[in-house]
Image 1 (cartoon, rainbow, N blue to C red):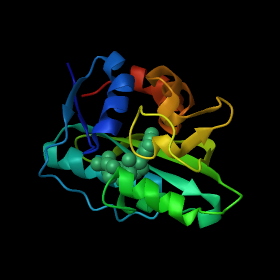
Image 2: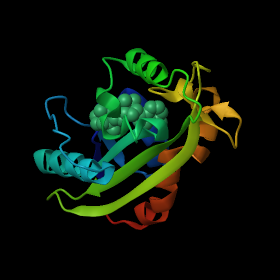
Image 3: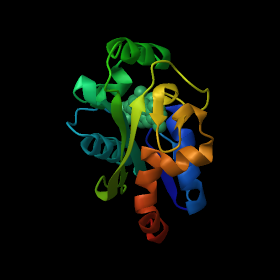
Image 4: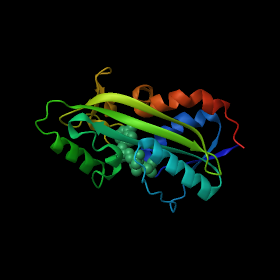
Length: 192
Ligand code: ITT
């Protein structure tokens, strides 16, 4: 069975990535903790490529990475690339966003997910980007998921990400959209 390293240190992300990757019949291994990749890219795709490439080279295995983030219109796209660095933990990051949007009327936002799959030599075999439009709630709603899920509301479903079950989030989320775009290619890929 081909081995693929999932290049993330975020347990919530890992859980969702496993849902998409498990049916492919690959042996999934978690990124070794000592491999830290500096996210120095200027786009989500650049950072996804960087993470996939560096982990692939360090382990000499195929590697898949996800770089994602929340872009809020009223904050000129922040936290964006800095979504993971916007506070010390999820609670802190959510509170910062709510504070910065206090009394702001236009609460439109989008979640972006870039995926990159690298070969053992670090070359990129596949990449894509998925987007989910939504709005930022005035207070957290729901308890599922991770990260900013409790404050990200999807109008078409009338639910926050944290109120969706895993199947609903899979259908509508940025990550679900991104994986759907490359699922055929992933299924037809020969990993060698
Ligand atoms: P890795 O780089 O190790 O994968 P990370 O948490 O640092 O993990 P990112 O740099 O891609 O990941 O940062 C993404 C941030 O956006 C992070 O704070 C996540 O919790 C959050 N995020 C990403 N996808 C999300 C989702 O589906 N729901 C809620 N928050 C999400």
